[in-house]
Image (cartoon, rainbow, N blue to C red; front, side, top):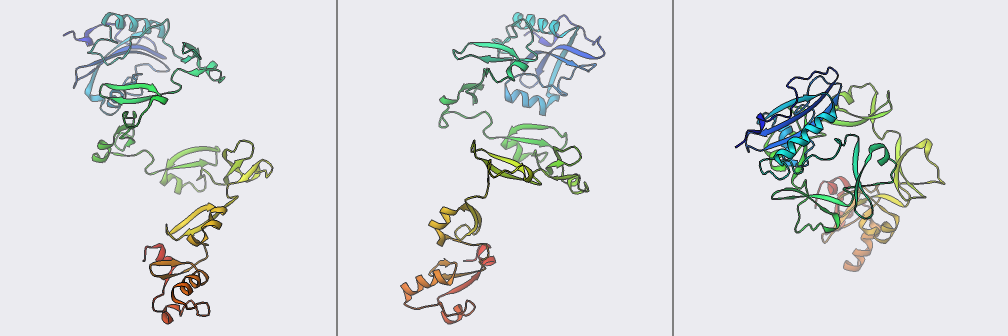
Length: 364
């Protein structure tokens, strides 16, 4: 078998540039024996950043995550060039020579092609499905449709495959990240998407937001992520990211947006609580927000927030003496209206008085 790490791109082993690094590389997975070939150009670096900040442009998720989490399992060859264009041309020659897109020993799914590396550009498609490349600036005009528009990735036995969203069938297909977790390694500080089984069995991984707080920096007026310790000890520099803000509905679009009180205009906005009430759900044993129409239609299922006593008869809960009266007269032929709420349980042995706190804590 050819040892591809010994193959040359006809570059240099040492970077001759002080303020840029244009290089080709070949990676080898020492566990599987497979290779990946690519090229890269970065400004402001005197050496390569492979497996440091850069982990290839491969779309094979498992391979890319393995590079991030276990870089020590890969060996590689680096060769430098004077420009990005030269590096890309060398990569194309290498890919063509070894047909890396078809060669089973390579992880690359396609061979490098075209007249340039595509940096600063992306692929789009027209209404007929024809694919073309444009600059990032032109794409920002909103006049073009990305080549992956209407597509999604699914996971198959042979790797990641792209299909049309309309063809997705949950009973047949597995989404790309099903059973995967976006996590943070507390040892390295790096974030990675790993199988859920690895996340649950390895204590080095935690949720990416564990111990962190999304806050607004009052000095820079920007949204930042800081540790809870930094947030608590910031002397007012960091506040909740929605401090002084509240959600409203735009009348013109129906969209919910977050604005400050100074921006609120009753001619343009509808307050997010308009038409809603916060009540206590007897069935759910907690405060809930529901529409006023729902409350009117099913008022017996909810109590207002001030209710502190419930009455229990025949396993049913009643929020007031008025509602209890209707049931008790119908089933017992007796009235409870003239009895104090504190004496009901004493006078009527089949009625139990329960406080709101007891009910909320699950007392039956």
